[in-house]
Length: 192
Image (tube, rainbow, N blue to C red; front, side):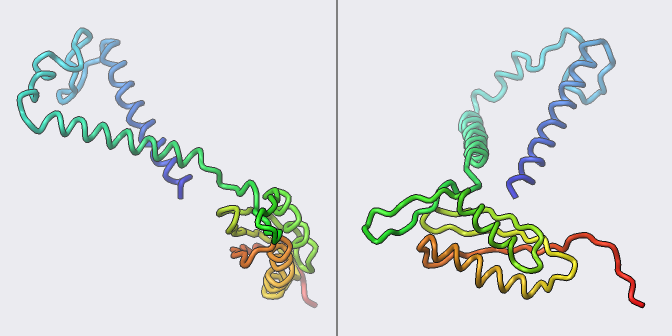
């Protein structure tokens, strides 16, 4: 979802900047502006003294301006923190029983889980991504199935073997997972 929001926001912002910048450039180069455009010619300013002082005496003007600017700043900060947030889990907390715990690199657990899932019958390739918190991770598993694979069997073995081994090895009570199955592209076989 964040990727879609980024594309839409950047697309709209880019479109507005290109339209406004292009029209200001066209008017500055001497093109005749349309009747509704804010500039009348090359030497015209964007806001005149009268436009800048028009709303000063109204009581709603400054609270509205400050509120809109604060909202824009809050939205920009939300967007920035969403960009900086890690999507991958860097480490998993493994309970050792002594109250301290140990840290397991998330990429190492992903690699082991992916290699175990890839070794299952009918699975050509597996990709794993850990998300969530380090004491409550969740897995996203993508399986590329061979042409003759039985999807239900591949899913069952992935859950009962690979994910169960990872959960037990890390000492987790539960390891929720989303498994996406895709079939490898292959040519049709002839039946004679």
